[in-house]
Image: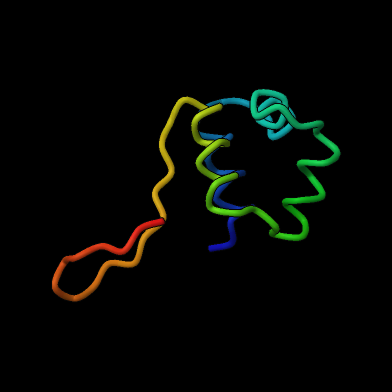
Length: 71
């Protein structure tokens, strides 16, 4: 699933608009929308978006052994 779709689902589950999330994150809705269209979010930005939304974002590789490689 694309990151932009995940963000849209997050907003639905939090009952907020994407524009509201953008403002909470400290971005203009227009700039945030452009980043969503281009799928240009870094893992650090996704963590900041999650923090602004009051949740956590985790990105990692999970090896068959259960070990994780995270940023």
